Length: 146
Picture (cartoon, rainbow, N blue to C red):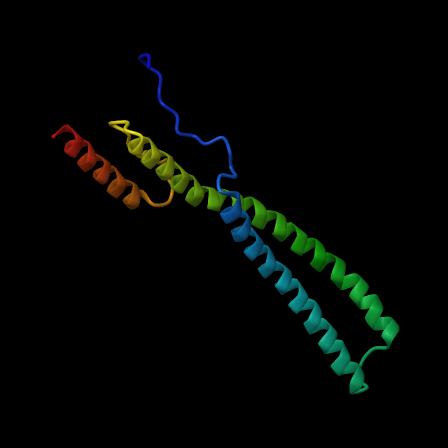
C-alpha cells in the first residue's frame, strides 16, 4: 500500500447470509401483517357486536366506513413493511457481515496464512468474539513458530 492510502473494510453487498437475513426480515414482516389482521379483526368484531345489539349502523354504512378506514391502514402497513425490509437488511448486515468475515479469516488461518486477523467495522456485532478469535490466531501463530 502506498503512503496516504487507507485500507477500506466497507462491504459492498448488503445480503451476505441470505438465509439468515431473509428469515429475520420475514419474521418482522409476519409481525406487521399479524398487527394489520388483528386491527381488521377488531374492527369486524366491533361492528358485528354493535349490529347484533341493534345499536349500530346498517350493513351499507359499515361497508362505507370500512372502505374509508381499511385503505389507510393497508397503506400504513405497506409503508411499515418497506421500512422493516430496509431496516432488516441493514441490521442483519451488521450481524451476518462479521460472521462471514470471521469465517473467511478462520479459513485463511486454516489454509496456513500467518498474520491473518479479524477486522470488523465500527458498529459491527461481535467485537468481543473477534478479539477472542484474534487471540486464538496469535496463539496458533506462536505455536507454529515454536
